[in-house]
Image (cartoon, rainbow, N blue to C red; front, side):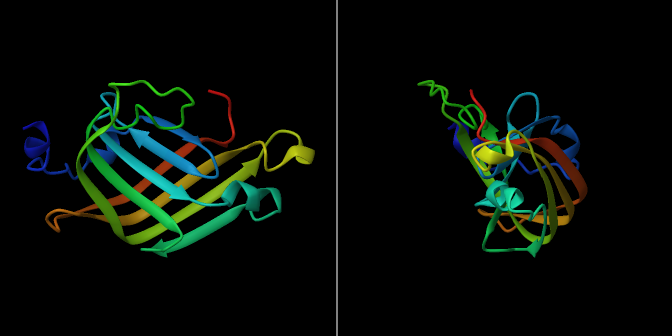
Length: 160
């Protein structure tokens, strides 16, 4: 019943303003969620921290782009199992709706940190800039556009 109700809830056009908690990990996952973790925006791509270690610090994509996954989810506990080494049974995310980026531009700047000799087995500071991103609901085709949104966080391999 809960999932059926979530599938009926539209995504507020100003949803990005509520995404105040930003985190990241791996090579590369960045996400922002509201305080209740009922709305979350996720960015995922492969090998960008490794590329930053080789001097490729700036990336830009016109969306959609096969090498980038950018989407919004609505539900509950959406980030409870993201970027953590600890799995908690019963705390799995419940996804009611997914909105996929279908147009716009994403830009990413990475600054590698840690010991250069261990790169990319280290971390980087990431700034993700989203401009004119249209998210389309996978279940209905509804669209919501985010004019501009920035996320700053650490990514890479961090304990915890």
